[in-house]
Image (cartoon, rainbow, N blue to C red; front, side, top):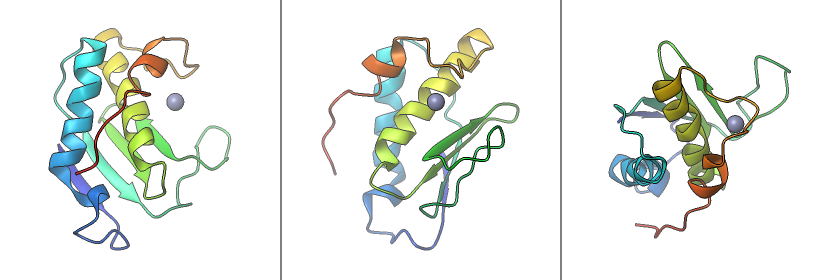
Length: 117
Ligand SMILES: [Zn+2]
């Protein structure tokens, strides 16, 4: 996984820990049964993300072609990473990122418990 993050995330912060973020990514991959090269992930400042579709704030965004996951550095970072990973994996496997969240993977693979580093 290629990771970029805003300076507000300290290097000691788990949100800046690419190994940990990759563990979460692989956890969702295994859950979904879809293997795909990890996308570029950019962690933005809390409140920086706005949907291009409706102009409303978001905790995470996924863009296809080239694949890009944006997540903010709020308390929702890890949930958002798993959620946007499901969009990415569905797009990778099916060519449709399921923007309406009809797939059960958004529940089963996003709510999985995990241990902090
Ligand atoms: Zn979504």
